Image 1 (cartoon, rainbow, N blue to C red):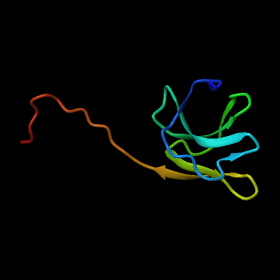
Image 2 (cartoon, rainbow, N blue to C red):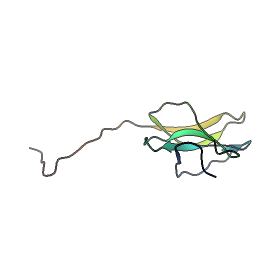
Image 3 (cartoon, rainbow, N blue to C red):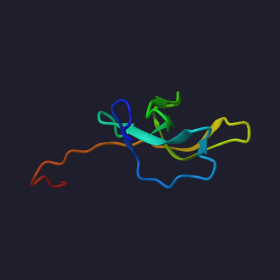
Length: 91
């Protein structure tokens, strides 16, 4: 079933408890982002809802707590992007 919206699945194993009441919690991304967001997919309709969370964190291994609340392991990172000039050397 296709997802509603501009979402891409992240290749990551599903965790036990990730599906409850035809709702799947999983990491996903959008075409305009490198971040892995936490999301919920309604398996009956394909509708995807992005869960509110810190945008500087990639979410992995989503599941649900005993009360049904989504849980996920977030891996935050800070990085620097470098563009190197061809032939440049250190002096």
